Image (cartoon, rainbow, N blue to C red; front, top):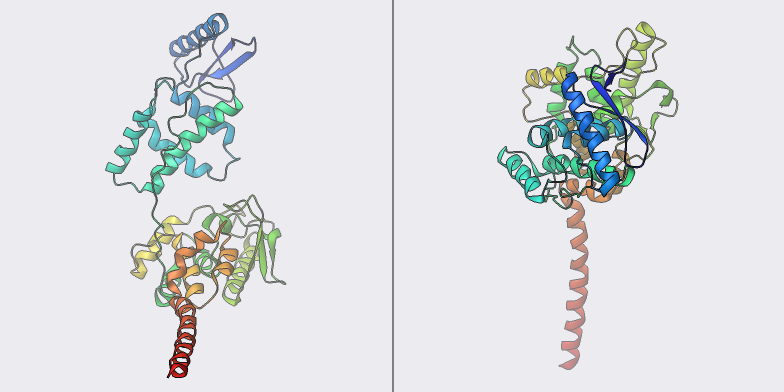
Length: 358
């Protein structure tokens, strides 16, 4: 008999699986007849598996619902996964995973290429499907093949767009005029001077800020790489943090959030206000994440070594920081200049040998 739970608008089914374990599973539908039909299907499959060892069918929808529920709030890429699932769903919804083939996954990849989507985005989408299948195999003993594995496309080094100093000044000036987001200018100052990601800043709490030591701390749950790091505050970033502290003292002294509304709740969205400031500043082809690129670009252009930039940005590997190496040609020039000395010494030795022979 299907039933409804108090916390769910859809019907749930209850049946005994092949191992004798009681299973309660959502049907994903608010239609009672559809729910009863699905529950009957599950019971039949459980009977067939118990009597004849037949593998039960699993649908794409069943897999993704269960996987997203199991990993939401655990994976740092939860928001990205939701976006990827929205792209996968129209193509794979209703598909039986036992009949899914590599050609089907390849067809999806080709469709997304035709849509003009980047290889990096396609890799994230197909990677989500592959991760969900592997999760079900390892944690739920689902006997389904993973034809999404090994379908990764080659990615470019990635887009790097940074602001000039003059563009940054114009953007901050326009952000200071924002009525929609009073903290926008300080957010931009912090992003430009710390290299932090949007989420790292918007989720920052005051108990991790040390203005006496001029730094703040990011825990492993706060960073994309899952590694803890401390972020130093230069004069510009410190002034931005003081502005935010003054706002808190005036409007919401009990709020734990660095970026807070007047009622103390966390400010979670700035994209619309950011786009308005960009437009008013006459800046095109620029995104919030490019503030991070700008910080890195400015540091490398100023002669800071790549390992130092890697540590500030929290990159998991130096290879991620090397995309900025071209901004410091003097470092390479200094390196090859060493060869001049080697070459000159070699010529000098040859000259001595020729002179002695004469």
